[in-house]
Amino acid sequence: MSVALYYTDTGGEGIPLVIVHGLLGSADNWRSHIKYFSQRHRVIALDLRNHGRSPHVEGMSYDDMAADVEAVLDTCQVEQAHLLGHSMGGKVVMSVARRRPERVASLMVADIAPVAYGHHHDSVFAALRRVEEGQPEDRRVADELMAEYVHDKPTRMFLATNLKRDEGGVLRLRVGMDEIECGYPDIMQVPAGEGAVHLPTVVIRGSRSDYVSEAHMPAVREVLPEARIVTLEAGHWLHTERAEEFQGVVEEFLN
Image (cartoon, rainbow, N blue to C red; front, top):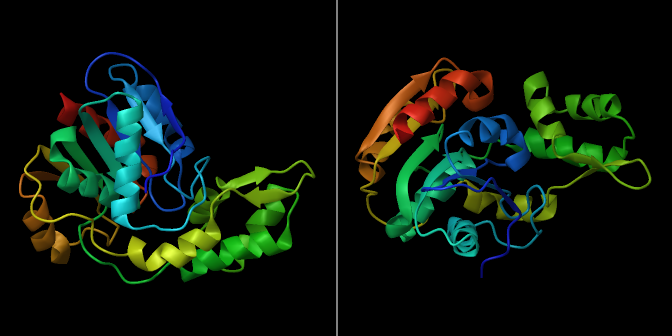
């Protein structure tokens, strides 16, 4: 059963570009990209279930998340879209392409492969739970709490985008931690659907990331046989580390 996701739509003509964020991200993380791409394209950016402004519900399977995205296309009366997904969002867009290839004009997958990954978000979840427990009233204290578990400052800055101040002045998480942790085994799995995706595709990977290594390339070629591989000098958050280069790759591909 799909849920009604929060989304933004810049409007405009032509086939829209739909942006799907990764685990613990949101459409807000893509604001500068939305502004850039909307100069030439209609851009729809959404918050996946249990993220951002979207509802908190049980179930984080790729079938469920793909159905949510397909429902947004229906709501926006979009017959076909260019899909761009980062990390978990990359698996979501691959799932949509497998389930409903007729709805997809092209596919842009950022730093994720169609494989099952090991569990390595324990410290991140612990950091967010520490903030929940600590109920900080300013971001410096929130950062100190997260630093007990996550030593990497850029990662903590990314996680802090999930903090919103409540009426009492306390910084609260706007992600569904219970639902995400319960659904985490599904998040680590392969995309939904079966078979290869025969669509124009680009896979953009980070040179310092291990999410799309050479060991993953056979799986990439099996599921995305038409994919062009582009490597940027970056880590997993390549769209923020190399924002202009990332935009250039996407724009060149769309053209």
